[in-house]
Length: 557
Image 1 (cartoon, rainbow, N blue to C red):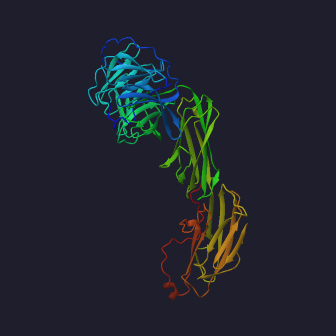
Image 2: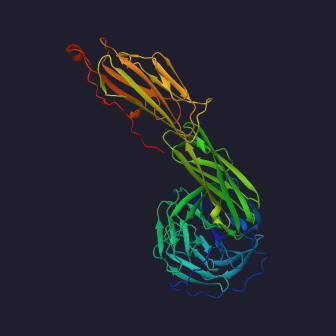
Image 3: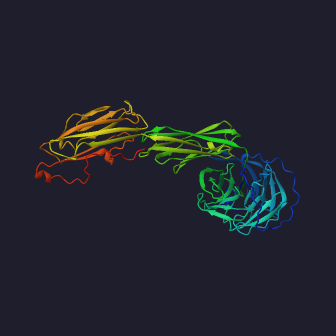
């Protein structure tokens, strides 16, 4: 029996509907003695309606039936306590659960029915595991009905024929090294050690492959493993957490940690198995605003719907929040946002029923659009994966301002200098009379060497001057522009610093010219020719680039 610390949650094996049976093992075989005739005939097999079966106990073992609920799993006991057993798995051929007795004479094969009643089928003649705890702790069936068990630390895998109660030994290419449980999926057995590394076992050849850091490390270890109806893998952290992992291809796997859920706290000799056979088409539709202004709130609604034909036993919803959408949060039950990822765990969902999840964030600056995709993963086999994902796109408002000084960059005393400011709504939002676009142009650094001519005009909107600032505001449809022009006349004799520096700003979210912007399109730099030698020596060298026009457009949507 594994220690309480190492077995707070344990071996989950599962009935899956993944195609392909395991080829017969070719490793060395150890003959086994025939078992005695089975005991009393069991009652009904398990319905395989998506429950998860958990066995636990110190001196005796009792079966529990679990169901997915919002945020995790809930268990209730079924059947009376019985002799202690371990390494359980559910046989897809007859839908009974089988286990290895962990006390008493020999390593007897047990059969368990849907009421939790245990039938002792007698000894199989298994050898005692050499390494680890000296007991069989990991168990799983393949799709052909072969029952695989192992001690979790040595390099021997036992394949049991539950009908003849005989076994074959498969020698592995390396020790399992702390894999307390494994599960079958796509021709391989999969298990996780306390380090978070995932181990893949080929039961046909005995080849063991280890993939580092697939799940977070665990102080107490991973005691249980199972396969969801859709092929995802579930690994139980003994501390009471369930890690759900997707595998793109068993032969050349790419892993993704989909969710972390809460499980019930249990103690003692713990093991589990689960059963998913009924097809359920879950789909998700994500909706959100088509447009938003920088700094605005974006709210997405994710609707999970069961399209049938069977009821859903549970589901996981994931959504990677796009970069630039800050302060992402959710108040939906069973959901959390961690490290920019939304993760939700939901319970049963009847045919035709739906549930909604919302997540909000703030549109940060400098992002032209947010493309956001949500994915739903049902616990049950899904006949229509095409509707398992949904994408919403939100464009961010964009206002481009360009200012230029007409004519040469250096002008004579007494010359007239004309400025042109172009304001363009790059969309997608319209600026209206009630919510207009606007700019402010502070002429302070020009008026020490020139005077405003009072001739500001605009092609649309309203322009006004309040010394020393020029203001414009107006409606702009997406794609429309407004042009503002005005002029100054350079002083003939009295000068300031001989520089005509001028910057336009806008407090409209999405503008390229906010206060403090370094966008060259927002500023013009002009100079006044010195009238005499004394004046020519006084101005301080300006290290900024002199230019008369800044009309080049920067990066755009």
